[in-house]
Image 1 (cartoon, one colour):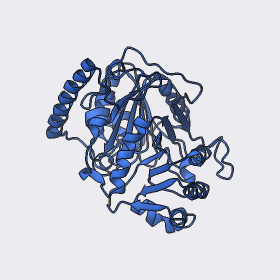
Image 2 (image 1 turned 135 degrees about the vertical axis):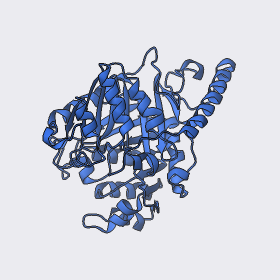
Image 3 (image 1 turned 90 degrees about the vertical axis):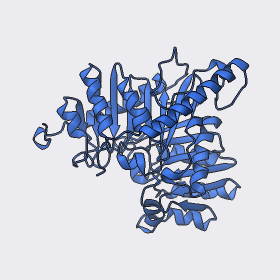
Image 4 (image 1 turned 180 degrees about the vertical axis):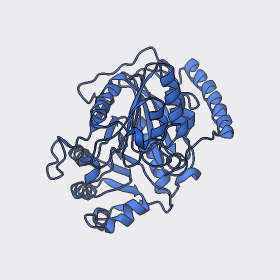
Length: 407
């Protein structure tokens, strides 16, 4: 298990503060002059000067006056949200209505490019769809992990990367001991697909996972820059930071993107966001070994904020797990009820902010791996994640007090 992360980064904080001041001065200049600097997608054609300001990189989201979205079920005209459900959609031989089917539909609709940064792969139907896309002239490229991607391709039930390569699709992997742990896809430079879901039979039909899709060329461009860095062999903390260009507003919804490990996500952004919660914090965590995040939740609970969460049972029993920190503080934390993995990495704050992506709440995810985090200020998206949280929470069980060593 990763060790507890307790230290802050004072030098990095100074740099981030300097960048924030410069961006603020530039933002004021652009607002006063009316220059459209790009980076904002808005179907109502609202000018840059009229959309909410980008999210600061050294403070959590600032409450806005309003959020404007149009939602029908799990989607709108510019976003879609999908959740796995092993109880109702657990047969990989029947993919109708599943995340796999939704992904294949996206692949089949692609016209120019499909760029993928995804950790694992074992779905033959997805491989077939990618090969068909390649054969019709679509630029298909995949960045994966060396150990759990390319090396694992020789295991029984695998071989899908070999299928792609035999068809002329190039697959590249990192060469580090740390993980290329991302799970994102970019279609035609227009559509972003991300979340916690690995493109595997287990990830889609057995585990608890989430996927969120945005129809936005500006948001897709942020992820495309990261994809191209990794495609060129730039992985881990030494890859270039683009954090200053990773905040935007879509239809009045502020969004911030963070890629670790070139930029930290927990201490400068997620922990402060949790620390500013005024009513509720709900979380789903596969691995939770970050003490500052756990302590922030404990402090908010002491202040009267409702805090509850679920940690995967296979990850919650180690010495580095913060299950005990939360449980011993009286927080309603449960171990999941999935026979396999509860694989989500989600925090919902005040029923409006959603934190999701590939990042587990651990030192290795923060400081070594290649991960992506997306933070969304949208109550209607948050309500869907809250519904899934309630489902997973209801299936979990409280820890056995005899197995938790409280002070």
